[in-house]
Image (tube, rainbow, N blue to C red):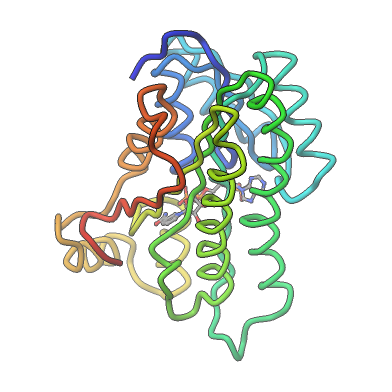
Length: 253
Ligand code: NAP
C-alpha cells in the first residue's frame, strides 16, 4: 500500500520476528523506517534487508521501558529520517509461569516492556503526529488478552494495551491520528519457539499440533501480521480507529 508522500515509521522490537517483517513491509510501502530494538547491532539484518530492496531504514538501540532511551531513540529517528508519524508498538517479552510461581520480577518485566514501553514510545512520538496533524499508532496485543493459562502477566498487559489503544483513539483523533490494536494468534517466531523449548516439545511438532486447533490449519507467519499493520498505517484507513482485530486464522483464540 504505497503512500502519497514519504513518511517515517518506528517499529519497536524489529530486529526479528513480527517486528522485522513489519519494518520490511512498511519500507516496501514507502515509509522510511526506524528499526528499534534493545541492541543497535541486532537491527543490522532488518536494516540491510530494507536497504537491499531499495528502502530507507535506520537501526537504533533502545530499551522501550527506559524513558531516556526512548526519547533519545525518537529524537535520533526524527533527526535522521524525518519526524515519525507512524508508531508500531511491537517489542515484547514473555515470562510465563502459573500464578503461584510467578515472581514479582516476572510481573514487572512484562508490564515494563508491553505497557510502560508502549506508553513511553507513544508519548514521545505523539508530539510529531500532532505537529503533522496526521499519525498512526498500532499496538500489538494478543489472543492471550482473553486469558491464557500460565500468562497472568502477559495476558494482563495485552488486555491493557487494548484499553490504551481505545483511549489513544479518543484523545488523538482530532489531530488526524488513528490508533488500532492487532491481536495475533499463534505466530511462528523466536518467541513461540522459546515456548516450545520451555515445554520440552519439538518445534515442528509444536507448530503442527497448534495448527490443528486453528481453523485455517496453519501457524501464522510474521508477514500475516505485517499485512494488517500495512493496512492500519495507510492513509486509506483514516476512519478506522480504536479497533482490536484478531489475526488468528479464525474467530477465537
Ligand atoms: P520475538 O521474536 O521475541 O521478538 C521480539 C523483539 O522485541 C525481539 O527482537 C526483542 O529483542 C525485542 N525486545 C524485547 N524487549 C525489548 C525492549 N525492552 N526494548 C526493545 N526491544 C525489545 O517476538 P514476536 O513473536 O515477533 O512478537 C512480537 C510482538 O507480537 C510481541 O509484542 C508479542 O507479544 C506479540 N505477539 C506474538 C505472538 C506470537 O505468537 N509470536 C502472538 C501474539 C502476540 P531481544 O531479542 O534482544 O530480546
